[in-house]
Amino acid sequence: MNERLNKMTQMARAAREAVSQRGKQLGGVLGSLFGRTAGAVGGTVKSSRTLLLGTAAVAVLGYGVITHPPVQSISRGEIGVRTNLLTGSVSEFRDGTALVVPGLQELRQYPLRDQIYRPEGSASAQGSAPFQSVEGLSIGVDLAVRYALDPTRITSVSRDLPDDIGRDVVQPAVQGVVYKTFSRYTVREIFSAKRAEIQQQIEVELKPRLAAMGITLRDVQMGKVDLPADYRRGMDRLLAEELETEKMRYTLVLKEKQVEQTALEAQASKVKREKDAEAAAREQIIAAQAQEEAMKHVLPFKQKQIEQRALEAEAEKTSRIRTAEGSAQARRIESQGEADSRQKLADAEVYRLQRVGQVNAEQMAREGALITRHPLLIQKTLADKLSDKIQVIIAPPPANGDFIGTALVGGMQKTAAAPQAQAGEEEGAAQ
Picture 1 (cartoon, helix red, strand yellow):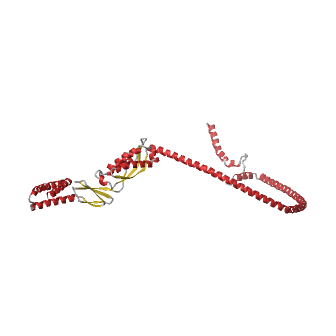
Picture 2 (picture 1 turned 90 degrees about the horizontal axis):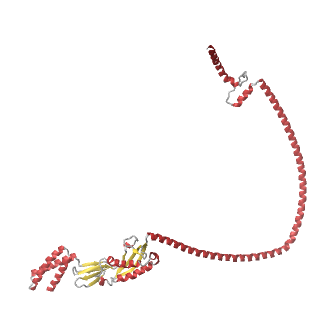
Picture 3 (picture 1 turned 60 degrees about the vertical axis):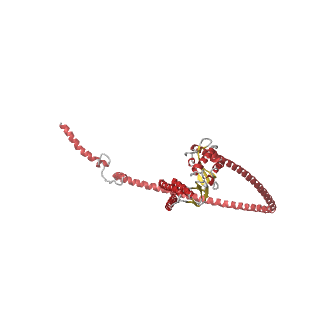
């Protein structure tokens, strides 16, 4: 009975340490009650004290169950490690439920799935913690470390594992390996040439470090490499020159192939021309032989054609002579008729000119006589020639021989000025 009471007292003390201030106060009251109860156990235990002790024990257990549930669930993909705070023994639990006595046992859950750690401050060359190359240049690398807890060793290392494994275990181990590894290589090697070698070396050095803490390293992946701006521009120019060089190399290879192709085509063309020449020569020989055979029959026929053409030419000559004689006779007759016709036309033109001259002379004689009788016709004709808008007025010519218009325009002005001049002379004489 005393041993049982001692165990209950220890459980109550553990509960008092885990609960809040209110629980501590209640635990103190219950502890004193348990102390008085333990002192009175030496003799006969009365029924009332036994009932009070049982009630207090039930109250403590109920409060502990509420604040620290004795049953906890473990999610799928996780493992639970229950540690006995008194004996230090450890038990493992997979997904499901586990019984945990408050104040006596502690349950910690760890994920068994793969987890990824990414150093965010090292992803950019302008980040808070960039990597350094062997030249001392700051570079950023998008690094991803995939790891998982070793389920076979969780029991043994659970006491040493912190709550945040990624921050307190993986991050220091990764930084201790990665910074040292990148500092051995140049920026060019990190960027392109030895990326796979760097990944493998990081895995080789990092795996035993994490394995010592019960962590299995799955793999290390290197993503985008962020170079400094100046180095990036130089790298781009260098890559462009390398691409140009590579292009030139392939261009030269292509030219060599084209030269070989041209040579083969020329050789094939030469052989073809030779074969064509041989075939053409055979055709000419066969044609010459056929022509020689045909000439034996053609020559007599050609002789007959020559004789026929000579006779036809003689007949054509005689025909042309007779035709020329007829044409000459016809031309003589035509020229004689044309000369007679031209003579007749010349005589007619002479007669026409004579008659026209006589008519013109008679017309001028009549007009001269008319003007002699009526000299004002010259002025009328002149006025008619000047404009068709002028109205012709026939008046006698001035006695002094002036233009007829002077009498109509200027004469009136002279007539008006004469009395004025005469009056002026008379006034001058009177003075």
